[in-house]
Image 1 (cartoon, one colour):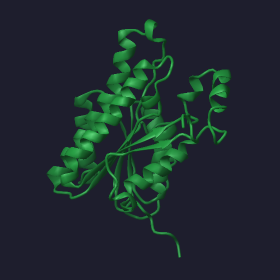
Image 2: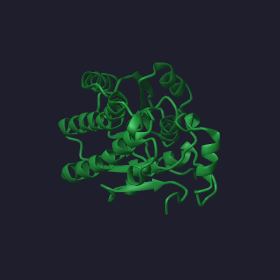
Image 3: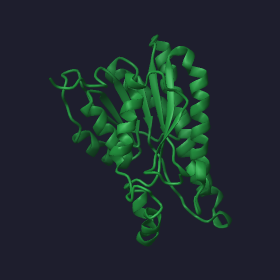
Image 4: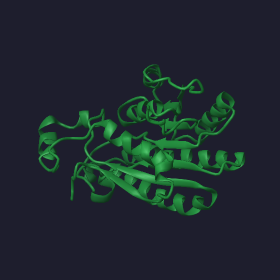
Length: 255
């Protein structure tokens, strides 16, 4: 007998779905039976992800949306479009969208700091708030918000004061959302990846990557699907009594 699809009947929004961890999350959610709204600021990437998603149950419907999540009007249009397309609100949101603008602290510009905070932290806030509002208006009794943070939000990292601050903020945001929305059945958790093979790590010099790899007890960098599998768990009823927590997916880095 085939295993039951853990996310069947669920509608999930995945930001940053056009590449990397976001694309892997979209793929795993679709494999588990969810309908997926692939959201990315790059329309080409979102459509490429859309074209590769599994379609199993006849009720599955996948869509792609081009959205700047750092802009409240853009996020509002996104949720209006999703409501028009599906006639129901999403019950799962995975906030994967993120940017890096690395530079040493003393050389970092205000613009580089602001851009990272706007996308990584404010964007996560805007999408989470919009989804929660839609769920509450609909009278739904449960939902799951999953925020992708980073282990550097706990540990810090040279050249990433902006990124580290944004991801530390995501953890605080997650805990506060969990406290406020638990009473209406909405859970909120964070996933903290370490070094995951993705377009972000492609920007790091290869010699530096090899030095980082030596610090990982499991001896390798993660694959985006390693993070996506945790997101499936947090979106499913298997984690129904888990909220406000952060799950580290690091291969043991910084133990």
